Length: 302
Image 1 (cartoon, rainbow, N blue to C red):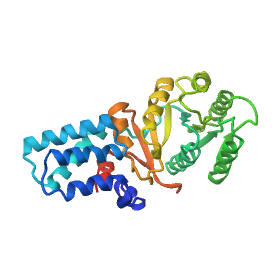
Image 2 (cartoon, rainbow, N blue to C red):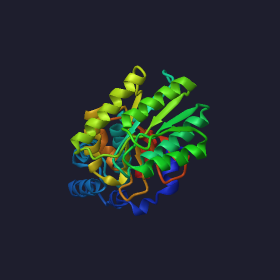
Image 3 (spheres, one colour):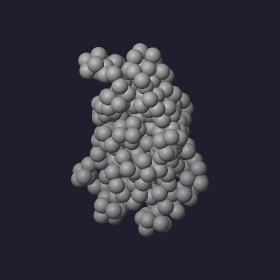
Image 4 (cartoon, helix red, strand yellow):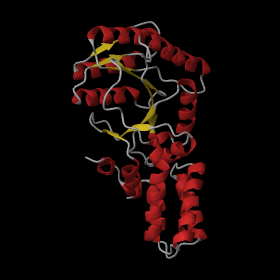
Protein backbone atom coordinates (compact mmCIF):
# COMPACT_ATOMS: atom_id res chain seq x y z
CA UNK A 1 0.00 0.00 0.00
CA UNK A 2 1.35 3.44 -0.90
CA UNK A 3 1.93 6.06 1.79
CA UNK A 4 -0.90 8.17 0.35
CA UNK A 5 -3.37 5.27 0.46
CA UNK A 6 -2.08 4.27 3.89
CA UNK A 7 -2.74 7.72 5.32
CA UNK A 8 -6.11 8.12 3.65
CA UNK A 9 -7.24 4.71 4.87
CA UNK A 10 -7.32 5.89 8.49
CA UNK A 11 -7.68 9.64 8.18
CA UNK A 12 -10.92 11.42 7.46
CA UNK A 13 -9.98 14.64 5.69
CA UNK A 14 -13.21 16.32 6.76
CA UNK A 15 -12.16 16.02 10.40
CA UNK A 16 -8.88 17.85 9.96
CA UNK A 17 -7.95 21.50 9.97
CA UNK A 18 -6.57 20.98 6.49
CA UNK A 19 -10.13 20.55 5.30
CA UNK A 20 -10.88 24.19 6.12
CA UNK A 21 -7.93 25.39 4.06
CA UNK A 22 -8.79 23.15 1.13
CA UNK A 23 -12.48 24.06 1.17
CA UNK A 24 -11.49 27.70 1.13
CA UNK A 25 -9.36 27.19 -1.99
CA UNK A 26 -11.84 24.95 -3.81
CA UNK A 27 -14.84 27.21 -3.39
CA UNK A 28 -12.96 30.47 -4.06
CA UNK A 29 -14.76 32.45 -6.80
CA UNK A 30 -11.51 34.23 -7.55
CA UNK A 31 -7.88 34.24 -6.45
CA UNK A 32 -7.03 37.50 -4.73
CA UNK A 33 -5.21 38.87 -1.70
CA UNK A 34 -8.22 38.30 0.57
CA UNK A 35 -8.09 34.60 -0.30
CA UNK A 36 -4.35 34.45 0.37
CA UNK A 37 -4.77 36.07 3.76
CA UNK A 38 -7.51 33.66 4.82
CA UNK A 39 -5.54 30.68 3.52
CA UNK A 40 -2.53 31.86 5.50
CA UNK A 41 -4.63 31.86 8.68
CA UNK A 42 -5.94 28.36 7.99
CA UNK A 43 -2.46 26.94 7.36
CA UNK A 44 -1.13 28.33 10.62
CA UNK A 45 -4.14 26.77 12.40
CA UNK A 46 -3.22 23.44 10.78
CA UNK A 47 0.16 23.43 12.58
CA UNK A 48 2.12 24.35 9.46
CA UNK A 49 3.88 27.05 11.47
CA UNK A 50 4.53 30.70 10.74
CA UNK A 51 7.82 30.26 8.88
CA UNK A 52 6.64 27.38 6.69
CA UNK A 53 3.33 29.13 6.00
CA UNK A 54 5.24 32.22 4.87
CA UNK A 55 7.31 30.04 2.52
CA UNK A 56 4.22 28.38 1.05
CA UNK A 57 2.31 31.63 0.68
CA UNK A 58 5.29 33.27 -1.01
CA UNK A 59 5.41 30.41 -3.49
CA UNK A 60 1.66 30.65 -4.16
CA UNK A 61 1.71 34.40 -4.65
CA UNK A 62 4.64 34.09 -7.06
CA UNK A 63 2.88 31.34 -9.00
CA UNK A 64 -0.31 33.41 -9.15
CA UNK A 65 1.58 36.34 -10.65
CA UNK A 66 3.70 34.29 -13.05
CA UNK A 67 0.94 31.96 -14.26
CA UNK A 68 -1.97 34.38 -13.89
CA UNK A 69 -3.92 31.90 -11.78
CA UNK A 70 -7.57 32.85 -11.48
CA UNK A 71 -9.36 29.76 -10.16
CA UNK A 72 -9.16 27.59 -7.06
CA UNK A 73 -8.33 24.35 -8.89
CA UNK A 74 -5.14 25.81 -10.33
CA UNK A 75 -4.21 27.28 -6.94
CA UNK A 76 -4.77 23.90 -5.28
CA UNK A 77 -2.36 22.30 -7.76
CA UNK A 78 0.22 24.97 -6.93
CA UNK A 79 -0.26 24.35 -3.21
CA UNK A 80 0.47 20.66 -3.73
CA UNK A 81 3.57 21.50 -5.79
CA UNK A 82 4.82 23.93 -3.13
CA UNK A 83 4.28 21.33 -0.39
CA UNK A 84 6.30 18.72 -2.28
CA UNK A 85 9.13 21.21 -2.79
CA UNK A 86 9.09 22.11 0.91
CA UNK A 87 8.95 18.50 2.14
CA UNK A 88 11.34 16.80 -0.27
CA UNK A 89 14.48 17.51 1.83
CA UNK A 90 12.99 15.31 4.57
CA UNK A 91 13.08 12.17 2.40
CA UNK A 92 15.70 9.68 3.57
CA UNK A 93 15.07 5.95 3.35
CA UNK A 94 16.55 3.55 5.84
CA UNK A 95 19.59 2.03 4.11
CA UNK A 96 18.81 -1.21 2.29
CA UNK A 97 22.22 -2.56 3.27
CA UNK A 98 23.27 -2.05 6.87
CA UNK A 99 26.94 -1.14 6.95
CA UNK A 100 27.54 -2.34 10.52
CA UNK A 101 26.68 -5.47 12.46
CA UNK A 102 25.01 -5.02 14.75
CA UNK A 103 23.36 -1.87 13.41
CA UNK A 104 22.55 0.12 16.53
CA UNK A 105 19.48 2.37 16.50
CA UNK A 106 18.92 4.64 19.49
CA UNK A 107 15.38 5.95 19.99
CA UNK A 108 14.64 9.08 22.01
CA UNK A 109 11.59 11.19 22.76
CA UNK A 110 9.28 12.47 25.46
CA UNK A 111 7.02 10.17 27.45
CA UNK A 112 3.91 9.20 25.51
CA UNK A 113 5.33 9.89 22.05
CA UNK A 114 5.19 6.20 21.13
CA UNK A 115 8.82 5.03 21.43
CA UNK A 116 8.03 1.53 22.67
CA UNK A 117 5.34 0.92 20.06
CA UNK A 118 7.67 2.26 17.37
CA UNK A 119 10.35 -0.18 18.49
CA UNK A 120 7.83 -3.01 18.09
CA UNK A 121 6.95 -1.80 14.58
CA UNK A 122 10.61 -1.49 13.61
CA UNK A 123 11.21 -5.00 14.95
CA UNK A 124 8.44 -6.28 12.72
CA UNK A 125 9.85 -4.35 9.76
CA UNK A 126 13.40 -5.68 10.16
CA UNK A 127 12.19 -9.23 10.74
CA UNK A 128 10.15 -9.02 7.53
CA UNK A 129 13.45 -8.21 5.80
CA UNK A 130 15.02 -11.36 7.24
CA UNK A 131 17.10 -9.55 9.86
CA UNK A 132 17.59 -10.60 13.47
CA UNK A 133 16.80 -8.06 16.19
CA UNK A 134 17.71 -7.51 19.84
CA UNK A 135 15.97 -4.99 22.09
CA UNK A 136 17.57 -2.87 24.81
CA UNK A 137 15.19 -1.73 27.57
CA UNK A 138 17.03 1.49 28.25
CA UNK A 139 14.10 3.23 29.96
CA UNK A 140 15.26 2.28 33.44
CA UNK A 141 13.06 4.92 35.10
CA UNK A 142 9.73 3.24 34.31
CA UNK A 143 9.07 -0.41 35.14
CA UNK A 144 6.01 -0.27 32.86
CA UNK A 145 8.21 0.62 29.90
CA UNK A 146 10.44 -2.41 30.52
CA UNK A 147 7.42 -4.66 30.90
CA UNK A 148 5.86 -3.36 27.69
CA UNK A 149 9.09 -3.87 25.76
CA UNK A 150 9.46 -7.36 27.20
CA UNK A 151 5.94 -8.20 26.02
CA UNK A 152 6.71 -6.99 22.49
CA UNK A 153 9.92 -9.04 22.58
CA UNK A 154 7.91 -12.13 23.56
CA UNK A 155 5.43 -11.58 20.71
CA UNK A 156 8.21 -11.23 18.16
CA UNK A 157 10.42 -13.94 19.66
CA UNK A 158 13.42 -11.68 20.15
CA UNK A 159 15.77 -11.16 23.09
CA UNK A 160 15.43 -8.11 25.30
CA UNK A 161 18.25 -6.94 27.55
CA UNK A 162 16.97 -5.23 30.70
CA UNK A 163 17.93 -4.46 34.30
CA UNK A 164 15.66 -3.83 37.26
CA UNK A 165 18.14 -1.24 38.44
CA UNK A 166 21.04 0.58 36.89
CA UNK A 167 21.33 3.29 34.31
CA UNK A 168 20.28 3.37 30.70
CA UNK A 169 23.84 3.52 29.39
CA UNK A 170 24.78 0.27 31.15
CA UNK A 171 21.76 -1.54 29.70
CA UNK A 172 22.54 -0.41 26.17
CA UNK A 173 26.24 -1.27 26.56
CA UNK A 174 25.30 -4.82 27.63
CA UNK A 175 22.78 -5.10 24.79
CA UNK A 176 25.34 -4.17 22.13
CA UNK A 177 27.89 -6.59 23.60
CA UNK A 178 25.29 -9.35 23.61
CA UNK A 179 24.30 -8.61 20.02
CA UNK A 180 27.94 -8.73 18.92
CA UNK A 181 28.42 -12.10 20.61
CA UNK A 182 25.24 -13.54 19.08
CA UNK A 183 25.78 -11.99 15.61
CA UNK A 184 22.50 -10.08 15.78
CA UNK A 185 21.82 -7.73 12.86
CA UNK A 186 20.00 -4.85 14.57
CA UNK A 187 19.86 -3.45 18.11
CA UNK A 188 16.88 -1.22 18.91
CA UNK A 189 17.61 0.75 22.07
CA UNK A 190 14.86 2.41 24.07
CA UNK A 191 15.66 5.38 26.32
CA UNK A 192 13.81 7.12 29.11
CA UNK A 193 11.31 9.75 28.08
CA UNK A 194 12.47 13.23 28.94
CA UNK A 195 11.53 16.82 28.35
CA UNK A 196 14.07 18.74 26.28
CA UNK A 197 14.09 21.46 28.96
CA UNK A 198 15.47 19.04 31.57
CA UNK A 199 19.19 19.65 31.10
CA UNK A 200 20.36 16.98 33.55
CA UNK A 201 18.29 14.32 31.80
CA UNK A 202 19.48 15.45 28.39
CA UNK A 203 23.04 15.01 29.67
CA UNK A 204 22.17 11.44 30.64
CA UNK A 205 21.07 10.63 27.13
CA UNK A 206 24.30 12.13 25.79
CA UNK A 207 26.07 9.65 28.09
CA UNK A 208 24.05 6.81 26.55
CA UNK A 209 25.32 7.79 23.12
CA UNK A 210 28.93 7.99 24.33
CA UNK A 211 28.75 4.59 26.05
CA UNK A 212 27.22 2.98 22.94
CA UNK A 213 30.31 4.09 21.01
CA UNK A 214 32.49 2.35 23.62
CA UNK A 215 30.57 -0.89 23.10
CA UNK A 216 30.98 -0.66 19.33
CA UNK A 217 32.86 1.83 17.22
CA UNK A 218 30.61 4.28 15.34
CA UNK A 219 27.52 3.26 17.35
CA UNK A 220 24.79 4.34 17.44
CA UNK A 221 24.41 4.27 13.69
CA UNK A 222 20.99 5.92 13.80
CA UNK A 223 19.62 8.30 16.42
CA UNK A 224 15.87 8.61 15.91
CA UNK A 225 13.50 11.00 17.64
CA UNK A 226 9.94 9.71 17.98
CA UNK A 227 7.40 12.54 17.73
CA UNK A 228 3.68 12.59 18.44
CA UNK A 229 2.06 14.42 15.49
CA UNK A 230 -0.53 15.89 17.85
CA UNK A 231 1.95 17.93 19.89
CA UNK A 232 1.78 20.70 17.31
CA UNK A 233 4.48 23.35 17.29
CA UNK A 234 6.05 21.90 20.45
CA UNK A 235 7.42 19.23 18.14
CA UNK A 236 9.76 21.84 16.66
CA UNK A 237 11.24 22.58 20.09
CA UNK A 238 11.72 18.85 20.65
CA UNK A 239 13.49 18.36 17.32
CA UNK A 240 15.83 21.29 17.94
CA UNK A 241 16.69 20.25 21.52
CA UNK A 242 17.30 16.57 20.78
CA UNK A 243 19.19 17.37 17.59
CA UNK A 244 21.46 19.78 19.44
CA UNK A 245 22.06 17.19 22.17
CA UNK A 246 22.43 14.03 20.10
CA UNK A 247 22.83 14.87 16.43
CA UNK A 248 19.66 13.23 15.16
CA UNK A 249 19.83 11.14 12.00
CA UNK A 250 16.08 10.85 11.58
CA UNK A 251 12.55 11.25 12.88
CA UNK A 252 9.58 8.94 13.30
CA UNK A 253 6.21 10.70 13.33
CA UNK A 254 3.44 8.79 15.14
CA UNK A 255 -0.31 9.21 15.72
CA UNK A 256 -1.16 10.92 12.47
CA UNK A 257 -4.85 10.39 13.19
CA UNK A 258 -5.10 13.72 15.00
CA UNK A 259 -6.84 16.85 13.77
CA UNK A 260 -3.69 18.63 12.58
CA UNK A 261 -2.94 15.70 10.27
CA UNK A 262 0.78 16.21 10.10
CA UNK A 263 0.97 19.91 9.32
CA UNK A 264 3.88 20.10 11.73
CA UNK A 265 5.97 18.21 9.17
CA UNK A 266 5.98 21.39 7.10
CA UNK A 267 7.27 23.38 10.06
CA UNK A 268 10.03 20.83 10.66
CA UNK A 269 11.03 20.98 6.99
CA UNK A 270 11.32 24.75 7.17
CA UNK A 271 12.93 25.20 10.59
CA UNK A 272 15.00 22.05 11.28
CA UNK A 273 14.93 19.64 8.31
CA UNK A 274 15.99 16.46 10.06
CA UNK A 275 15.08 13.55 7.75
CA UNK A 276 11.70 11.95 8.41
CA UNK A 277 12.29 8.22 8.03
CA UNK A 278 8.89 6.83 8.96
CA UNK A 279 5.30 7.91 9.61
CA UNK A 280 2.60 5.93 11.33
CA UNK A 281 -1.13 5.96 12.00
CA UNK A 282 -2.75 3.92 14.76
CA UNK A 283 -1.43 0.90 16.62
CA UNK A 284 -1.26 -1.84 13.98
CA UNK A 285 2.15 -3.50 13.90
CA UNK A 286 2.57 -3.02 10.15
CA UNK A 287 1.38 0.58 9.83
CA UNK A 288 4.84 2.17 9.70
CA UNK A 289 5.70 3.55 6.27
CA UNK A 290 8.75 5.30 4.80
CA UNK A 291 8.14 9.01 4.31
CA UNK A 292 7.74 10.18 0.71
CA UNK A 293 7.22 13.88 0.14
CA UNK A 294 4.93 13.65 -2.89
CA UNK A 295 2.64 11.00 -1.41
CA UNK A 296 2.48 12.82 1.91
CA UNK A 297 1.60 16.10 0.19
CA UNK A 298 -1.08 14.37 -1.87
CA UNK A 299 -2.56 12.87 1.28
CA UNK A 300 -2.66 16.31 2.89
CA UNK A 301 -4.14 18.13 -0.08
CA UNK A 302 -6.30 15.27 -1.30
